[in-house]
Amino acid sequence: MKHLLSTAMLALAAATPALAENWTMTSVWPENIGLIEMDRHWVETVNALVDDDKLTIEFYEGGSLVPAGEVFGAVASGTVQAGGDWPGYWAGRDAAFSPLATTSSLFNAVDYVNWIREWGGQALYDEAYGKFGMVYLPYGVTNNESGFRTVDKPIKTIADLQGMRLRLAGLEQGKLLEKLGANQVSLAGSEIYQSLERGVVDGAEFSTPNIDYTAGFHQVTKYWSTPGWHQSASLLGVMINKAAWDALDEDTQQRLRIAAEATLLWSLSFTEKQATEAFAQFKEAGTEITRMDDAALEQIQQMANETIEEVACEHPTAAKVYASQIAYLEDYSTWRDASAPFNLGRTPNGPDRARIEACVE
Image (tube, rainbow, N blue to C red; front, side, top):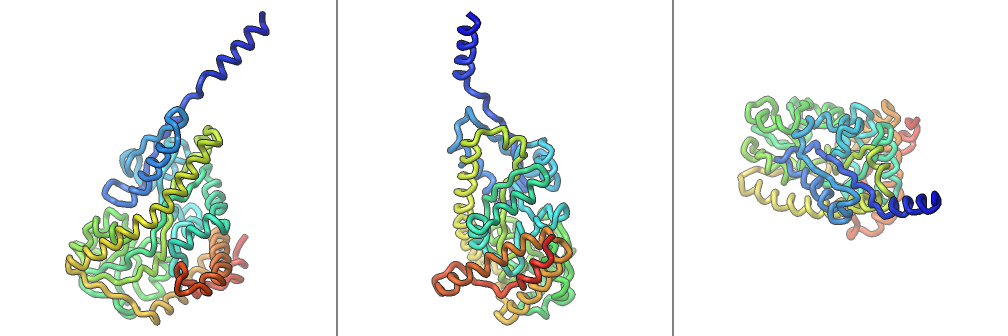
């Protein structure tokens, strides 16, 4: 009798579906910043791939649950299960997050995709976020940022940067800007428009042309200096609390990874199309668009290399990321350069690999 009862109970348990995991997800991006579309696209793709009886994700725009700067801590603590981010916001916690987010005059968007998927980059995201009890899925990439938008003075040469007060994000970026003779001003994205309007800064950078246009920067600036050498590409993704991740079965975890890979590819074409449309909109609005010449960009490249080496030797965890990125560039250059002009971007004359590797812990 006991045997029959036990068998019946086991059968009943096997027939009872597991309860769905219910996640709360937020973002560092508010509703009015278009980068939030990458978060939404991932959530929508997950919903299309994962049954409701396995996982549901309720998404909230940035600032609606916690301030943008507190999303990292909210995910790490399990207050929310997931949070969309740009790794560079956490460089104060670990300098490795800086090159995991962007580089100065180094990676383009395709380089980030190549490196993450096939040259070992994903393992470094796993390591950096894993220290804080999180899993990380890269799912958004943009090509080089717009460049500087200025109020009264165009930036056509390096000499034009002298003494300018420019809003700029990033550790390496700030050091590089100072070497070029300008002054870094740190401002949240939401503060840039008014700071330009009131003359608090002479100019600013923020994101890709479409994001800058929707932010209304064409209304408060006259000039636009390209290209965005300070951030030659940017990477975005989702932080997931490790305990919440471990509560999922392997099939659901794999579907979340697939959703991230699909969103990563979509994000590149999506943002490039929008950037192209926004470029035309800035011209129609009367913005004067200039481009630094190749000689100036090569000079900036060499100064960027010096800055990267300095930061790497001050921060061994950043050095480990840069060493991996430079190794990828060297490896890929053999085919990329041979396939020119039908290749995927340029091989930069980047930092010395041996010097960077010497700074790794």
